[in-house]
Image 1 (cartoon, rainbow, N blue to C red):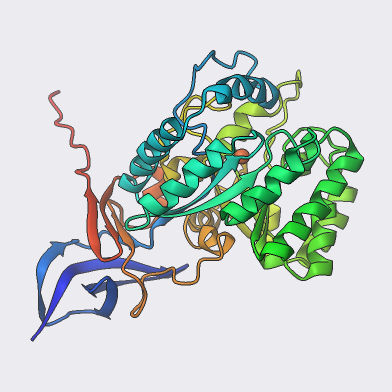
Image 2 (cartoon, rainbow, N blue to C red):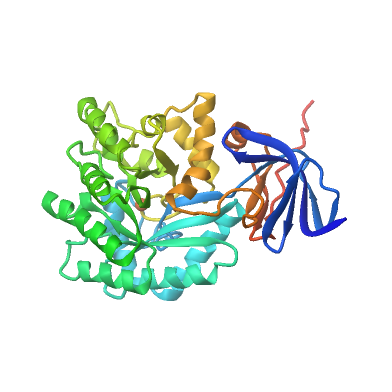
Length: 418
Ligand code: FE2
């Protein structure tokens, strides 16, 4: 009889979209070694899953760990706008130290991991000459690698051409080891600078062989049209699958004639898209009276066209979004509401946007609960994806690289009435 490190009995295993079966899962030396309806085996540790949902871990494809847990420092964002958030962060980041960033980032990552997130892409602001945020997150990436995978984006919050030294800081960030080239074309000083910044981002990515993730058109301005520039660069460079357009909220404000033309171009790109519905439903539309825009990109249409869309939290308790716990089911639930994706398939798709689609965005190549892959998986107190999102199901067990990392008891309420 085989003996394994870990055995999970009677898992409702979500192996890929629409495939779910009741199986035992055996884990040994950090790998998934067997999956079968019943395994005649023993293990150091056996978990009775009792037909609960077992899924690959959540993927947080867009967060800013350098600013996490700073809400109210030095003041609260009263207007609720992106731009007041940037002003507050400009003040707060004067006091950044390596220890400050590392401590808050690791605390946030632990919160995320306890809720089933084991893959994270974080932006690091590289607008300061000291590059403190980036250096701290690169140290964090190393410190946490045994239990969570962290990708770090060099993110020029104040624009690549917003200051004399910013471009050189981006290049320095690549040399220090950032995984991904970031950008913010809609916040460059002029439209021409914005276009130039997109070209520069592709140039850096090719020079240093890195992925790309651009904060693109995060504004309600229907004339903010850098997504078309990103699409053109992706088509010509054939780098589309390694490129992500984050936010693209202006896409929700474009007229349909332009949006339809753009959709046709986008289909040729293999670009990844990330929407951040929790934050963009609160940040955007602030200058509108009524009707008030939702400020979220066209998630449903991109998904219907077969493009890869994932969802991010973006911020957890920072100058832009003072709420949040890192729970990806909150993100999926908000996407269902804001993007009006309430059809059964649409709701399931929103679960996939915080799992498989996020893995595709991050270019992860060993994701999924399959024999031969690293043993990363979560057990949800739910029977299926719809149930998990509707009830924001507790993640009961988190298994990372073959080890039990966290366990949470679902809340129980006793009815005392008659
Ligand atoms: Fe962001």
